[in-house]
Image (cartoon, rainbow, N blue to C red; front, side, top):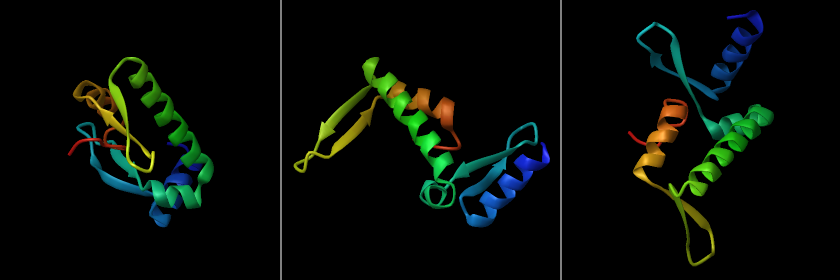
Length: 100
């Protein structure tokens, strides 16, 4: 890992925006973001993450793996199928887990 990335990781950890979850089987660190904190301390990174998630949700929707439901206030809620959850978990877990 280069010095710039190391400094970024240390900064995000110190701010509480990046949380060490553990180590994988190869000994590499596994992190997850606290998105609310990240939104405040590094909004450009937060925006990139949210843009990618939005694109992935739209792709799942176009494949019929996400339904959009609206409540009485017309707030949209996404209901992701089991297959859609698996796709998202494979891509984001543990950074953005959809299942426990």
